[in-house]
Figure 1 (tube, rainbow, N blue to C red):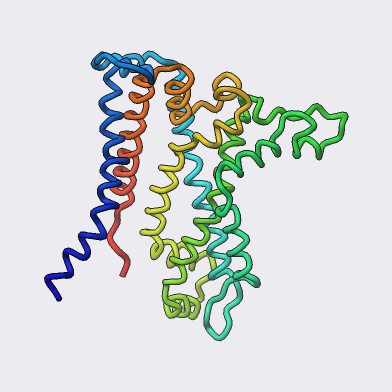
Figure 2: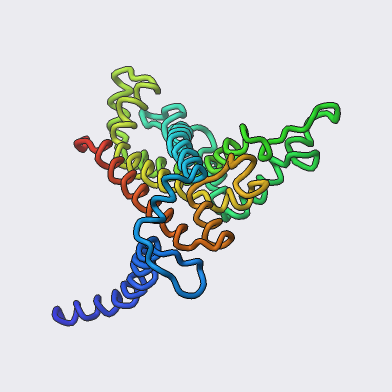
Amino acid sequence: MRHGKYPFIIGFLVVPLALYLVFVVGAYLQMFQLSFTDWSGFGSFNYVGFDNFAKLWDDPVFWIALRHNVYILIAMPIVTIAIALFFAFLLNVGGKSKGGTTQGVWGSKVYRVVFFFPQLLALAIVAVIFGRVFGSDRSGMLNGLFPDSWSPWLFLADERWALICIAIVLIWQQIGFYVVLFSAGMGSIGQDIYEAAALDGATKVTLFFRITLPLLWDTLQVAWVYLGIAAFDLFALVNIMSVNKGGPNNATQVLSYQIYLNAFQNSQAGYASAIGVVLFFLTLTFAALTLRVTRRDAVA
């Protein structure tokens, strides 16, 4: 019976592992190969060495897209984690204590469900909805709230606001998941720790910074990595919400959208693959650095 266990397990792993190797690892290897070619997306191709990467270095739109990704990478995780932590703390510890037991605010169970609602919507649906919200004419929902005598705000058609609008939508869509994630982490913190701190006169602020935050550190680390990866993948929002290719004056250009434009509209699949290689290493580097910098000894 014992010897028959391993063939049984291997039998379940062979198919998914084979699919992963073919469609994920194989796709990555092909991307690396194509990044050294002049392939247009059709027909044959020639190997051109590092010409595509040299072209990237001299491409101003690439640097604009990279800069926008960095802006989102800095702002989005900070804002999302801060808001999600605040709400999760309110839902778990922010209410009045009853019998020495810390509780969330009134109706916290309902709020958890409400906060998670945006996560149930596909990102494409969210982009379509907020595209209407941020419409640059009177048909836009926000502009419809202003008097007719006011000039309509351009929002997505304004290069100063276009990327901010997309960041706001991304943060709104992400917060619910991390409220639930942080709530689960806070739920695993023993009530006796909060009770002991409360007996010592700890305030809610002290409970958050001295107890909740240190004991939730591993969850925060994972959240930061996930949000950083999401910051590199903005294709759906940019493609659906932008008023033209990358917004006014490339105001919403990001690397993932650059890959799409070059591969499917400019017929430069080899060049698009080179951008994909850069994006691949940027994502790996970010994840590795984040795990390294945020690493700390476990709190007992």
